[in-house]
Length: 175
Image 1 (cartoon, helix red, strand yellow):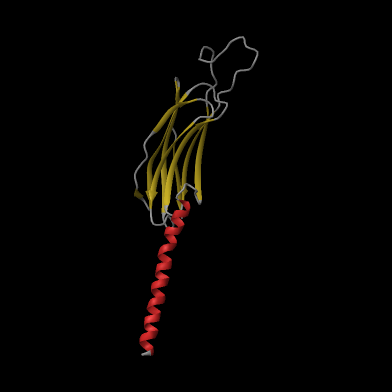
Image 2: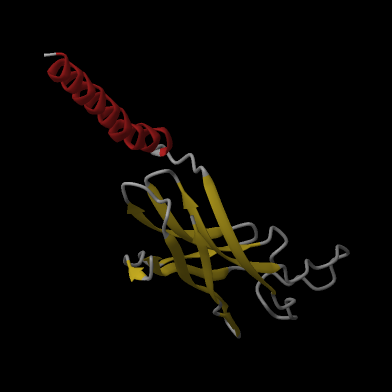
């Protein structure tokens, strides 16, 4: 009789412990689902933009103030995660001192989990001036992001008449 009660008690304890462990990942997932990342890794590339030339829109001859410089374009590939979601992020941006209007595009061309293609984002494009940016995101929800190798490949474009910069970046992280 004691052996049966002991076994029954052990089974009850195991059931409680298993229920406790199965609820931990969902509690962690709820904590970060509002966009509060618990980690991230970023790769960037920059390019100095051309200085404006006489005759381009915005050029004002015979003005006492100096003309603004060309500015800088930045392409960023990023992995950012919560306990249960990985985001591959592509961002293309202009420095605040950028002269003129540029066409910007960003796309996560592939998000990989353990070498398996998880899809791509839409290409996001727009015309932007100094300080402007465009961002594209590909998200993958999983039971846990940990114990996996993640990789995001991104494509970017910064273009204006007579100028085009098209970097591709990769960012990778083993969690």
